[in-house]
Image (cartoon, rainbow, N blue to C red; front, side, top):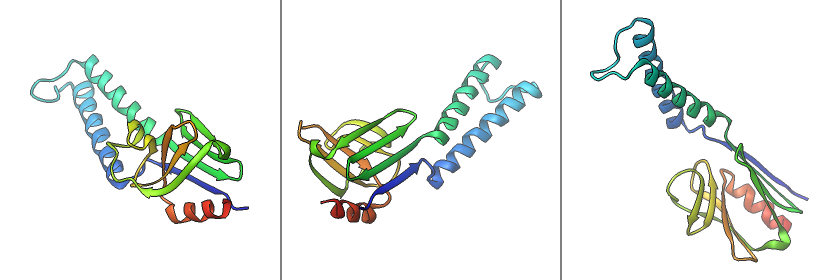
Length: 157
């Protein structure tokens, strides 16, 4: 019996570049204003506001390093975990239909409710597993391994 497992992270090259640029600029601003006591910018924020902004920025980019989308598909069903936000389990008896498809762009990455595909879980790319449950709810799970996913789904039929 084949199983499918995939773990995806927010590690696109452009996202890494933005992370380094913004955290570098924020670090520079903190050092300039707090260590060298030279105001940063034409209209500098207070030291407290600058520190709060820096904490927020560093926490946000730190969080991006821990977020992952883990998908497991086997004979019992489909399990996803969008760490640290929780997960879902879809038993095969609850699934009406499914299809691996190119979903295009759904307005961003992460957990995207209220799309035409229902709730979307994705971190990059435009390929995913569309699921419709017997109760009418729809979900889409992004994948970077569309061919392997199709193969496993065919073996489970």
